[in-house]
Image (cartoon, rainbow over all chains, first blue to last red; front, side, top):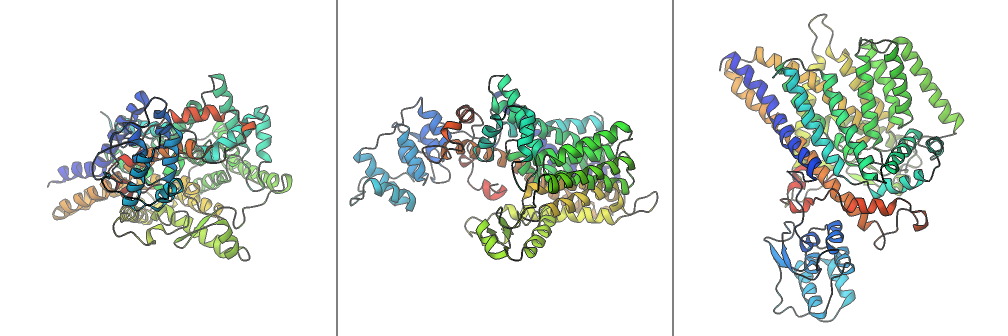
Length: 153
Length: 469
């Protein structure tokens, strides 16, 4: 490697990562300013179930104004589920392992009948999450039979 | 393209990147909604300033109240668009800091541009930078003070004159009445003068010293204010984060060990990225199934960068053989580091050290520029491939940290948006009583409809790679 080539390569080695970061984040920033949509690191939930599963209380509130809060939808919950699952917002809320989310989804119009409650309790039991188990036990503490209940995994 | 044009293009891209993400973060409930309501109830800008004089027994920050009132007036004038004005102001000041950094660095050749790329990654990748960008109270006074510090240094390095002297004094007054850390500007001006930068004259330094004395008189005699004491805010100690009651129980009788510890930790946090707010978070027990890998990158990259700075400070400059640590930028960095650390004696906080982080990146810029020149001329041919790989490895690691800022800002937007549901009725008590709510309903409406993003939808280990805050 001759001195001239080394000089050029060394300059590039110092600068290149900074240039890549500036280009990636700068273009993403332009998109964010023009369309409120950054190109990187800013995914958004596609439906209310996905919002509920990913602890997105603000999107649950916003989406509940225009969405049927009892309708199942395909939800990605990378922190809790291995694959996309078709769940209702209430089921997704239990998957999120946040009791406040169950309360919020109910407050925003989701109906909780006996069958749905059994499903939610079974999901909470399968996840062994004490917070959601306790929240649901306050509503129904009867003996639980989870035969035939499909648990998202 | 000339080196100068390339440097400004890079600066523009990074300024847009940072300010766009800052702009998307909604005004927070905590530390913002209550202040906005209180300041909005004041009848005028002057009244807001006066309220700021008497708002606390320990904090003298009337310029913050005044600026908040001014921005509220603007927001009212354009149809109560609070987020547009406050987040816009935050975004513009963030962009200004990036632009001013390049203005002070002044790269003239391609080696300088490369060093600037590296220094920008350090500037935006440091944990002290994130704090200036992520939160506002509702104005981020730490960012304003960092901006004032850099502006004062730019004045010190200028040709000087009566206008420069006047500007330095005005900046000092505004900064010191914005946040106690603003007093560091006097230390920066003195340090730059001692190092040979004569942009701010001796007479201006005397005037600033008189103004500093006036500040003390106003604070101690005029307003009967006291300094921070143990237990006013939580702070780290060892690997623990102590609550206010734990602090009072442990250090209430003898506060000096805590003060000394906090000052030393604040000095260490900029060059070593640990401890964070006095807490040695990297040395807490790790979950073996989910190790926080970002600590390795944070500490490793900081160790290398600090080693480069130490090497540079110890070198002698060509014309007169004087060591570089006596140059204006290193002296300003040392003054900011020491001054900020002393001012944070009662509790450690990364944001308090943010101005020192800016000067750390600035000194790294000159150090990397010089190191590059040395490597180009003195590396043996057999060592060149290894040097290239090592340099690329370190700069990539810093680039990764800089990308982490974007992750943390998007996460900040998510958290701030979520607060507007979870910290409001029926889930929590409101930030202000319903009878005092004037702006809160509009702030809530705006917050819910801006900055949509959800970090939990990303590949889960992202928080392990960049940290959560």
